[in-house]
Length: 97
Image (cartoon, one colour):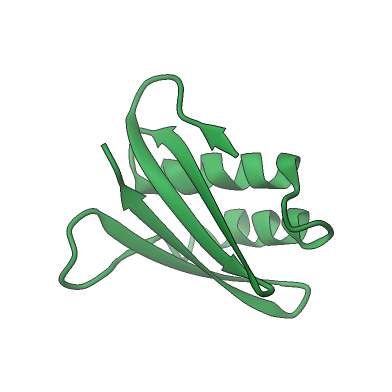
């Protein structure tokens, strides 16, 4: 899943969920918008089958109270946790360009 056209900066999103690793590149103005854009694409593309929609919805629901958190000691890297179908997920958002 790549959505690297348009305006903004390029972010790489790495999602660990249900034993799978999903890597995407998204163009956005900031890390929060990158997560929103990623979730919308993940929800539509459904790479994790039944869990895709629920995971994307959980990520979007958490953004208001739990925005991406900068990873200490690293520049341009954030993390965000989510849960779907009882399975924990970790998202890492990396400013790529």
